[in-house]
Amino acid sequence: MNAPEKLAIPSLKDRVSPEEWQARVDLAACYRLVADFGWSDLIFTHITARVPGTEDQFLINPYGMMFDEITASSLVKIDMNGNKIEESPFPINPAGFTIHSAIHAVRHDAQCVLHVHSINGVAVSAQKNGLLPLSQQSIFVLSSLGYHDYEGVALNDEEKPRLVADLGNKTYLMLRNHGLLTLGKTIADAFVNMYIFEAACMIQIRAQAGGSDLISIPQAIISGAQQQARTVTKSQGGMLAWPGLLRRLDRIDPSYRD
Image (cartoon, rainbow, N blue to C red):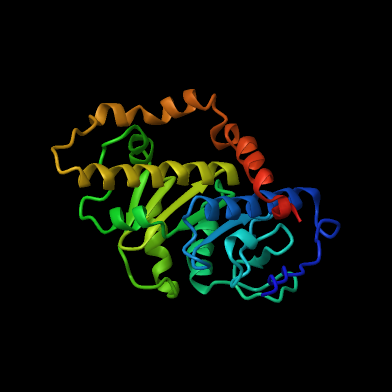
């Protein structure tokens, strides 16, 4: 059997600003990392990044491409109404547009919005008490976590006000019976935040499966988690880990940069 041909996507590197190109490379890397860590749910989740220098344009995945296929040039640029700003042979995920356009419209502090249907995240989102203070990872999430009740597949614009109200000024959002969402001032921040969120959920599921009594972390420790996080990352947030993550990707397949 012949190997399937790779999708031929013309390069946009010389057609966009250097700042947009860097955002495209980082966002494509983020998609590849989500696939590498096993959070992608085939093609059915989404990550968006605001186009640098704009308030009403963002990049989203070409709907139908697997996350480990996505490249900088294949990302689709759209406006806040879901209209393509540049031609693309690919559609966009309508549920992705609903969720991400709602958040980008109000959270101008966030360049990136990352949403996944990870198995552990969905499992915890279905638990009445949500994320529990059981691990070091959990305290960073709990210090800035909101919850949004499930309203079906996110296709209804009427859900947007409730979604953004439940998110507020927080960094993490648990979508009940659905999955996880993180924001970041950079794409790197959004990814590392999701790594911590998913890890906290995985630890919770495994700890509960152990069948013994669990030890909760006191609220006083959770209250100081944000300052502890800044100390641990030397106030660089996700950017401290990002170069190493890109080196990891480059060893696997550097074509995300195309």
